[in-house]
Image (cartoon, rainbow, N blue to C red):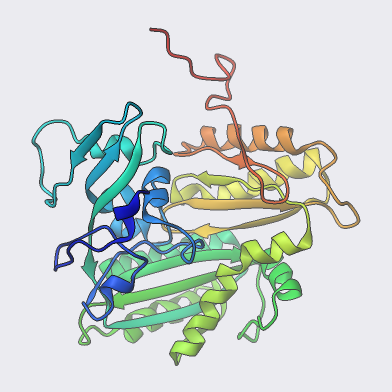
Length: 352
């Protein structure tokens, strides 16, 4: 990003020109709904280049949906001025969307007009223990139907990931009486204090327990408890990183196929490397799974099976209608997999 990328040019009820973290929005009653693990270090240009999603993509869309206008420096030095500040813009091709997700290959973003949303005035956050991801998907389906537009977070993580986080990250503890195979972090928000969020979430929680889906659950009674709940999910990557070598895969499948992918993926991984520890966590509402692996107990690496594991998972994801493909690497390093994993082609080429 260029020199102007961190300067606030204008902020009002609809948009902000460029952004310096979120400091410019403090006290405005507005927010940029882009929340992700790299929140403390990510920059706006990087978020646009990667077309980042975050844990509220199912509510507000990807980063491309939050970009109204861009200024971009092209490879020949030409400055493309697309700094429009309106959502409804059909004056020709929406060129700004070409740069979102292009990873800087088409140009360097130097300024941006971002779409803002009203900040919530109340939140209800719950942490649930469930026996399986399948139960979490079933519960999430009911919750989305009942909570509707008030649902702002629906994140899942596994017992494997929780154990690693508890082992390596100080201060973490599960505030539930029972453990499960899967955990669900639920958050509902509203821009009005008159919306009965506690009742909405509490009613679905009771239903989940009566239906045998939820083993245990708690609703945060304070901001400190809410922060502690979120920390359990946010520290999933750190716990695994501190355990040693890892393979990272970032996968998106239709939400209804999350459980099927995780079950089938575990069988594929076990066939290639028996005992590998699998830590799936991610965003239940949009189908994004961080499918990360740690070597089996007593091993320091993946015995050269990393590429084969990544390719097998890529094929599985594509067969389930994947919107994005896995990336694999060791100790947090990622390397792209082929865009096509079938027999016809292992890469995409363009002749011209």
